Length: 275
Image (cartoon, rainbow, N blue to C red; front, side, top):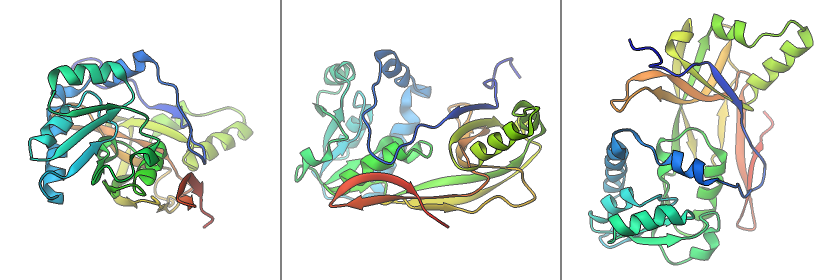
């Protein structure tokens, strides 16, 4: 095994979450980094094509990819016989897309403003929701678009990892009792995201969890006595072949119950549900 084959983990960060939609500022460097994909994105493109084929939409249906980047995936879906629009707010990406995928309709716009597209499309496709982690900011956008047209996906398939790790016990440890209590609370209620390699856990088990839209309500029970840690997310793949290096997601040992509140056909974000 080569050195640095896996990233230096366990790695943990705070998850930004609010109960109302927010505008996030993205820098050009962040945009450029997000364009990097393994195997030129071919595996994800085929996955999205398979998804659309299963839906069996009428030919020439109007599909909008939200957000679509340079439009590589949109062009593959267009070849199935659909009228496809690639929506993104990054002009640099769209300019590249117009050059290499000219048969796609490239549209610059804010995909959080779904109300501007009423009656224009039959289906909104959310590429990142299909294969990305648990992300409530994306769920809010899907919620908004579901009031404009049909959306895909309508559910998010997640994994619940229950595990023990002496390494994490040692790394995230504080000599003061009060501080350890705070650490445990932060790891318990879905406020922190962690990436863990399989080699860093002593034992683990995996369960399937489905989060269904457009309210995206999800309920996870607290972890039992057998496992100290619990993570809601998905596998962390190490390469283009999908070899499982570990898992990533939200730490939620104390349980996790969230749903989206919708009033007057507006998106009001995710809230905690009393259990």
